Amino acid sequence: EFSVAEYKDSGTYVIKGTDDIQALLDDHIVKTQSIRGSPFAKPIEKEVKDWEVKLIYIQDLLEQWLAVQRSWLYLEPIFSSDDIQRQMPAEARRFQHVNKLWRTTMEAVFENPNVLDVSDIENLLASFADANKKLDAIQKQLNDYLETKRQAFPRFFFLSNDELLMILSQTKDPTAVQPHMGKCFEGINRVRFSASNE
Image (tube, rainbow, N blue to C red; front, side, top):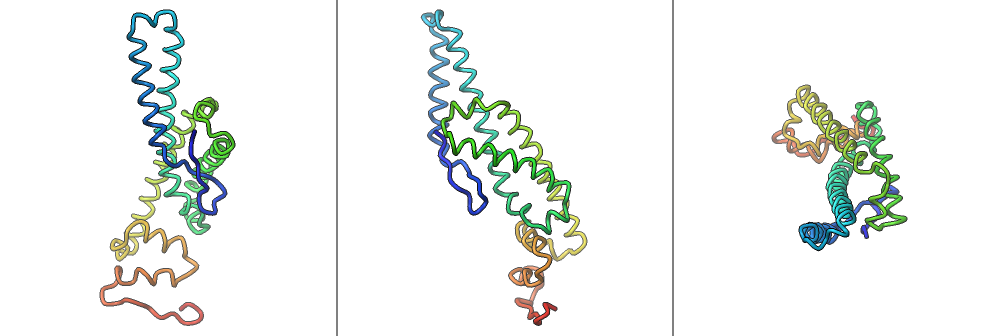
C-alpha cells in the first residue's frame, strides 16, 4: 500500500516512503521473469506475461509519479502566490491543470492506498507523463522569467532562484528584500523602512 501524508495546509497529500514498494516490485519482476523462462510455465504463460506487464507498468507509473511529486512540491508554493500568478498567467494556468490532476489522484489514493487498485485508474501513467512535460515547460519558463528579472536588475544575480522568487512573490511587501540585502549590496546589511514602507 502507498503511504500518504498530508502536505502542510494545502488540503492534499504526498506519497512517502516508496522504497519498500520499489523493492517489492523489483523482486516480483525478477521472479516473474524467471518463471517465464521456465519450461514448466507453459500452461500459465499468458497469466505470467500479463502479470509482468502489470508490474512494469506500476514501476513506470511510480517513476513518473515521483517526478511529478518532486516538481509539484517545488512549484506549488510558488504558484500559490497571487503576484506570481499575475506575472506568469499562462504558466499559472498550466500549473492549475497539473494541480487538479495531483489533488484528484491523491484523494483517490488516500481513500484506497492499494497499489494494484491505484494502478487500475484509467490513463494514470499517460496523465502523469503529460504532467511531467507540462511541469518541465513551466520550470523552463520560470527560469527564463527569473533571467529577465536578473537582466533588468543585475544585483539579482547574487541571489539564488528560491531567494529571488521569495522577493518576487511578495511585491506588495518591500520589507521582503530585507533578508537578502547583504547578498545584493556589499556593505549594506539592513534598510530601515518608514511606516509607509518607503
